[in-house]
Length: 142
Image (cartoon, rainbow, N blue to C red):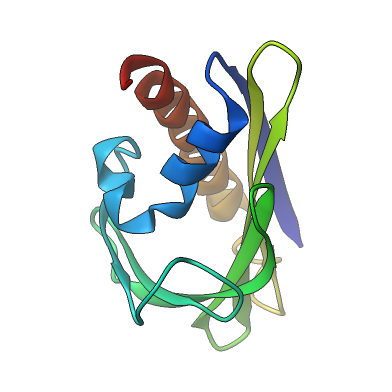
C-alpha cells in the first residue's frame, strides 16, 4: 500500500475552507493538476455522491464518497484498474487562528506494490498542489 498525506494551515475560517473543498466542480480553479470534475447527481456533495475526476493528461475515473462528516471530512474511492483502488481523504479542522486542511491519497490492491514508486511521486505532487492551491485560493478570495 502507498499512502501520502499533507496538511497546510490556511488563514481563513474552517466553514469557508470546507465550502471550497466540497465544491468539487470548481476544483480546477485552485487545483492546477485537475482538468475537470463532474458531479454525477444532484444536490450537495454527500455520502454516496459520485464524481468523475479527470486530472490533466490522464483519463478520468468515477470516485464515490464512502465517508462523509459535514463541515469536517470526506473520503472517496475509485477503482483505477483491476487490482488498483485509490482512496482520497479531505479533512478540515479549525485550529484557533484559521484552518488546518489535510489531503491524503492511498493506493491498495495487488497492483499498488509494483506501482508504488510512480504512485508515491504522483501522490506527493498532487497533495502538495492541492494543499498549496487551496491555501492560496481561500486566502485570496473573500
